[in-house]
Length: 306
Image (cartoon, rainbow, N blue to C red):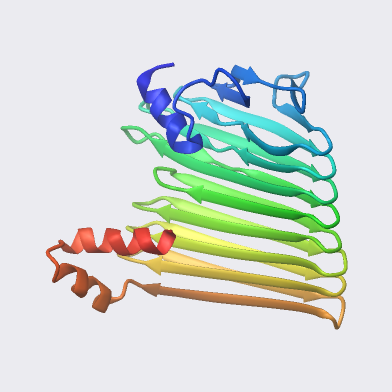
């Protein structure tokens, strides 16, 4: 791998080189670059080469699985289908994400469709980071789709981060949650210049005492635009909470469109949204400490997204 590719890999997955051991699948420019499996987790390529199947055995504990994707060819439009089959009583971390480096004059994109079939009594954390860089006017496009089926008595945490450079993105998440289970979603998005990002969540709370908690933090700068659309459906005794907080600067735009539907009088569903500009008081306080206006703004944004 080139040094720039290794740096990109580190940003999106915390892997700074191809591992010698562990469970991983690294994809670059539409092909598998490297793979590692063990006795508890197996990874198989789909017959058409357009994705992988990941099989996690029952009672797998303290396991990390890395499946990053790199797109470093200008004009490449990559699409993959990754399916996760996670048996009962597992405790695992999955680190995905995509990095695009495009210095050419043709647009590059990656569409990752990830489906999770999670068993009972599981604890799963899924981290997905998106980042793009490159000179010129070519577009860097990322359109992830995540489908999650959460079994009984399980906890699933999903952390998605878009940390810069992505020209356009549409993220769609569909989830169903069974009894006594929780789905926690944490989203962080930064857009600048004329970038655009759209997020769509649809969560169905199927089982008694099922829960979902969605927290989105977004910052829009320049002439960028962000759209947040959420739908939570409660079928029984359940709890759903959606919070969307955004910071605007320059001529950017943010919109939030909530939808909550209760099919039971015992469903408790809450939506909160707040969009505003950076506090002038905060900015002036930091500037009094010697920071420039731009430096003060960056400090505030970093703290907000963290």
